[in-house]
Length: 592
Image (cartoon, rainbow, N blue to C red; front, side):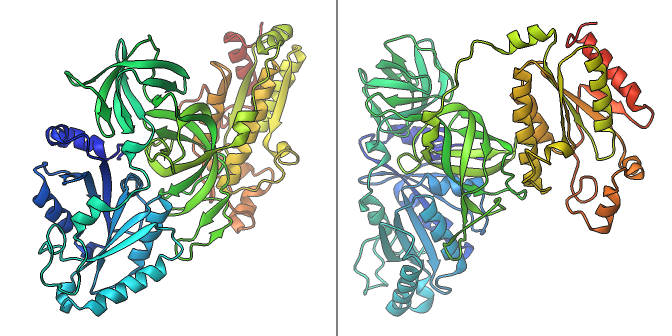
């Protein structure tokens, strides 16, 4: 997996050449796209061989006459990957290669749409292998015309078309004498002279903290420049100071700029956390915990709205709940359409809700502080990449109300320790029967309880939900929120839900305090639960009358380490309830 921007690999593999470069030259990032037959690698080698001694690397460094250039090529498959999205979304200019023998292909449209969606405004159209068609101008003109028709609604600022010969080096760093009808610039000249709206070096100062020191922080500068005496703001902790010293290794610097990894020392003692963003005090990053974002989904498993995923922006992590997409994009037609979820290779606009505030910039203003990765919290697999559009206004207008009576006061009044007892298991395992028996015992002891039962809740709070994976996730999310409120009221809450997915049970646990979530696996084999079939549901599922039935055509992920496991094949509901009562007494939830 790749989580790092271009200059990080350069710092690792080409550090000597990079440090020796002229820091006054602007740094631009270039990505080369196109099909397997477009000779992307050959093109890069021609540029690098002519301009640099940088060691072989996935990202190549070029020291040109007017700019420092970092360049890489994308994979050629029509599928979203983390490497593909991060390489494009980090770039300032894209070179889109087209094989003159094949012309504009579906791959070309795929690349062009991705470039547009990922914020690329400047395109160099490299029309290659014209030598195999006699360097005819008509072939070149037709491809340019076809691409302009395709790209008419993609909002590129400029498209510069060049005939090139990637293997021979024609029109790359030197003029191709074989193409007398073309009097324009070479590719290298184009990369040196294309006017960008604003280079990363010209944007407000941003540095992402990788580690801390006694007097400051070490990290990589992702935009702008910094010098001693500059005022800075640390976010999201909202602390301010000024820079006293800048070092690169042991070297003391008079200033530092985009792409450099440096250590900053500050005039004031600051408590700094890894992942925080150091900003120019005059133009700081924003902070929020709610966003609208464009999400590129790359997992074989669909997005489940309401599920909590891991989020990483720079070096800062959070837990993110993703709402149902506002809409998705059809890459073939560029039309927006309604969507309940996102599947592999889908692009959608969603709202995200985080468990903490993070510092950020909208992606349109800063690629590195506006882009994040999404991970599955159980497998840690990267499942998507997101680009922040803006913070939701409601995030700034909604605040937690301070209350004088808290959970501790309410639970002390009731003489009990509040908690959620989460019963999970297959349909027919006996969850509700055991929960009901336990509540009777607690009630007889004068304890304050409530039951949230799966069937009962679906008659009211969750009556709008079905049984798809996405609906099951939302079902558990809502119940978890209600259960949390009941625990705040000082109650012992018995939650009886199949709750088939570990991820949602983990989410419910993380919403609670230490010891406030007790997972109870009512462990009944499928064949036994099916034999009982008290409600006749298994028979209907087997006959196809019920779809997405847990254990039949929808999975059940059994708990791996529950607090309690009840084997109902050799234990009655009454005996199970008695065992749970003993557990509650021994662990201080209720008195004797």
